[in-house]
Amino acid sequence: MYEKFMKRFFDFCLSFLALVLLSPIALMICIWIKCDSPGPVFFKQKRVGRARNLFDIYKFRSMLETTPSDCPTHLLKDPQKYITRSGRFLRKTSLDELPQLINILLGHMSFIGPRPALYNQDDLIAEREKYGVHKYRPGLSGWAQVNGRDELPIIEKVAFDKYYVDHCSLLFDIKILLKTITCVFRRTGVVEGCIQQDHVTIEQKDTYSGDVKSL
Image (tube, rainbow, N blue to C red):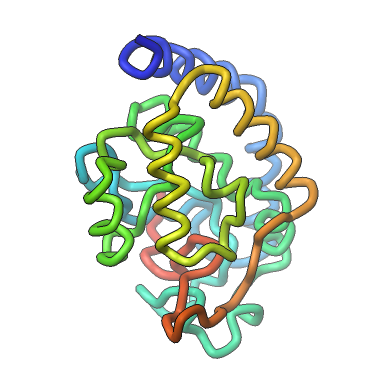
């Protein structure tokens, strides 16, 4: 009952309310980004949603417009030199994710759920498919994000995603939401650049630098 009906109702109402209340902050961020560096305020990129349908996820731009197109942040030689001054603050505070309230309002995402994979993360997508993770809307935050975030290898991340799918409930979502707030303040599990796990490069900060488009 909760997953099929109440969860979407709460997502719609809360995202609409949040967009209204946070609009002054969003406006100030937009002005800061435009004054800080040339380029659009927002960027969008393809992500895998419910039933493996692709959708455009929205974020505040945190990198220079001259950043190599369609190049993952972790593959850049020096990703820090591409991050703008405003972008450093937005990424540190996770405010770059604020425009995803639009995705939640439109039904592409939920507040809580498995974090949406990039369209070309074939290994993560295939692993999630085994456990029915894609039957749920992806989330702004999720059980994996509050238990390691960037530090988790794919196998562990999917294990947390599966646990969420098997135990989804209102109380569990509230628990994840409260843990998310704590993780944001502590910056728990955030890694910029790249790390090596089992000889495989794992994407960090969950963002591409490319695919920048004006909105």
